[in-house]
Amino acid sequence: MRKYRRFELYLNLNCNQKCLHCFNGRALRAAGKELGFSRLCAEMLRMRAKGFDWLSLLGGEPTIHPEIQKLVALGRKMGYRRVMTYSNGLKYADREFTAGMKKAGLTDTCLSVHGHDKRLHEAVTGVPGSFEKVLQAIENLKRRKVEITLILVLNALNKDKLKEMLRFYASKKIKRYMIFFLKYQGRLIESGSAAKKLMFRVSELGETLAEIPALAAAEKIKIQNIEHVPHCVVPENCRGLIAGNDYGGAEMVIQSGELLEVSRSHKGFLFKSACRACRYYRACAGIDPEYARVFGLGEFSPVK
Ligand code: SF4
Image 1 (cartoon, rainbow, N blue to C red):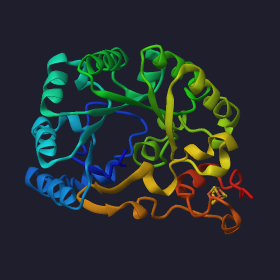
Image 2: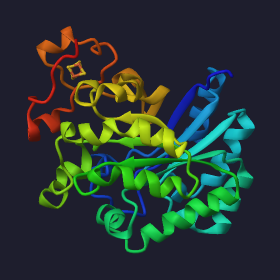
Image 3: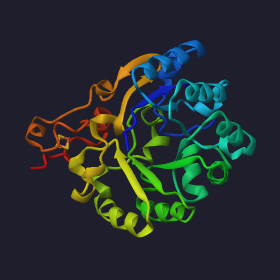
């Protein structure tokens, strides 16, 4: 099957959740550089003409963009074979909205979840009732045959429950997953002690991660990739899943009004001088400087 060329388009900065680790921080919001409708359409057309055929819509929260259904429909009309939203799921808890998105041509949705129970999920989202809503969203999207990928965002509160989370959502017939480590940007850094409770050393997850490929095989689920972590701190049997510097296969992103090549998405990330000897040096996105400020560089050492 021909590989898709994915174009990621950021529609807005606002959101209907208040996640403690949202990467849209004060500075980005203050800059307020959202693209207008005509610029969004122009970028979609331009990238389609270059051969991109998978349109991913992100935010903020793309589903609260006032023209979301029109943008999805236009994307399909332009010839994008897949149109996906990255969403927190709140809007998809509304059956009519989900039906409208499907009718507009939505093919895929990534939903971010932070636990397999109310306590874990809402400790991050800050919205009472958001766990029930994300479960309802899953049912609504399944009913409309929209492909679902779950993004499990790991934090200090839920990291030891990764296996339980995967089993729980596998029991809801979700087949595809991405595992994200925290991004040390935006609110995570700005929220001080409130967000500090989410931070953990990436190397702490080694043993749990090592068991994930076998669990995935047993549950017949697919872990598509692991993001925001260098290869050297995950067990060997998971390194093939690290998204690295190709940003999970997407070729370009537009973020906060700026056309950004993927190779620049990790601008400012660190490498130790020893990294040059690492077999993953070329594929690795490097170490988040804000993570290094909190935990240092001691965990990272070259893989021979
Ligand atoms: S290049 Fe450096 S940070 Fe990246 S995997 Fe290798 S040792 Fe780790």
